[in-house]
Amino acid sequence: MARRRGRLGQLRRHDAQAPDRGRRRLTPSPVNVALVGFGYAGRTFHAPLISACAGLNLHTVVTSQAEALAAAWPEARPVPGLDDALADPAVGLVVIATPNALHAPQARAALEAGKAVVIDKPFALDLAEARSIANLAGARGLFLSVFHNRRWDADFLALKAELAGGRLGAVHAFESHFDRFRPEVRDRWRERDEPGSGVWHDLGPHLIDQALVLFGRPLGVTCDLAVLREGGRAVDWAHAVLRYADRRIILHADMTTPAPGPRFAVHGARAGWIKSGLDVQEDQLKAGPPVGGPGWGVDPSPGVRVDGGTGAREPVPGPPGDYRAFYDAVAAALSEGAPNPVPPEQALAVMELLEAGIESDRRRADVAL
Image (tube, rainbow, N blue to C red; front, top):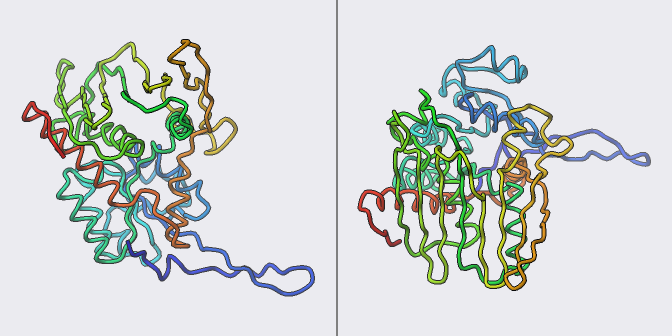
């Protein structure tokens, strides 16, 4: 995809001189970011991660919570509406962190205003809507990426390394779970009966994206979506099986499990790999320690490799997780033309499976891709 040049790629001159001769060094100017939305996603994930990136500057936040913003990020400018942010020529990147139904229209407005765009997952409400946004970005030559941050979970990075090392052998079965226990139905958009709500739209993109990174596009999907909690209005239980020629992938997310099972269970021809517990970064971001401080992203309960022949169990520590890598890569893409960390075509592949899962549930049948 063509990348936008101009202001995003300009360099700022610093007049640092070498001891023996005058020299002016060029360093990329931080890209000014307008964050749209200061709810849970914007406040917990995007604002801290953007601020931790040397190549980005949290310049503007579209929010009605000006006092809360001032308390947390006093240097950011609050504005009441998206149009205010889009009209500012100093803003180079717009980050969409609003309810899912707003992702596509707000991204379209930002692209039409000539801004680079990052959209929180899911890309859009459906595949057609997502394609229209990707096509617009391509036609305008503008940067577009989707925040699939769980590519940088510690356990996922450890699993990628385990598979790359071939120690498990050919993988025949793979299970990936987000088992949560939230028995009380809350009055928030994620749990209301409205477009883009429910765990399949919320957690499904994470599960799908990780599966696609590891194993590529499946042949088909069978999906069961349900509302199980008393008083529930949005999907709170989702179970999908991705069909490949030589393996089966199970993806599961719910809000009804008081005794969660493994986060990952991988079964190969030589060994298995089991991992319990979630990546710690979300809790660290909620707690508010400096991003990247001591212990950042370190997995307190590493995965365990289980030898298929002997049953011997061996802990397999992996690298720490680091969601900053996404925004560092975004900054490098905008300022230096480096690769997009999550290009639109990869996010469209996630949307294809998300939509196929909904169709499978409606038909109660396997949907071929």
